Length: 318
Image 1 (cartoon, rainbow, N blue to C red):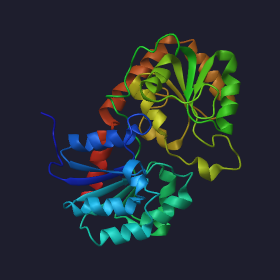
Image 2: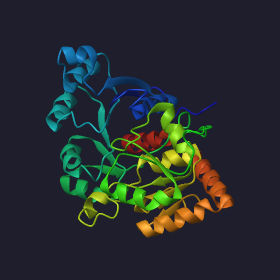
Image 3: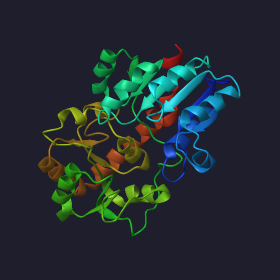
């Protein structure tokens, strides 16, 4: 029987719940339930009747808290909750309040303003911790994860197959990397690219279709934005690993906390190095297979959303 170490813990989860665009909210709810928590969901987005009646998030959250006691309120990002809203709601609930912010350091000016209102504040970017400390927040590093039920190896089909694949929003640094790899054969998906974004099963098929998955974090090699580059590994690091596609990523400093370089992932530090490594990987089937197998095994063993939430709850409740 699977252990349920937090059985009976009452959690209100504030996130976007949409199986097409915002799967992380649903995955976090499922992981909390696996850990034994009783989960009540509060939709972060203004949709349906709430939009018609103009019920802001703080008002909807207050109504949800009034329905019964909560041990913990977990907010994913929470830019629609002002610090004053959180402080007011804390006065009517004995719950501990936690924020997990996914956009550091790109929106550090926002997150540093929100953080002091919470009992605990979690970031996937370790370089942001000093800023939170100066702001007076109790902040902790917590990496992203994967959902094994969704991020898994599947047969992609001819439409999706290519030597290299990149999935992510269009940014200048990413455009430069994609152009440099064009002669090797690369398919690109995401907001702003000609092929457009992919969601749901199409997202998994796109990542599965590449012989090698390319990851380029925002602000890579942008000399005027070193502070915005940070150290945190994006979700793609963990998604590609769980899907079983060998990964070539820019060398964000926090990646090696979770995957071994050259054994589970290949890391590059410049566009010329990216091109050299891509050619080498495409020419070495054995290396690709070993990278993919080792990374997937480690992702399932250490890096699922359940692992992350168990860590978050342990830190919060100690």
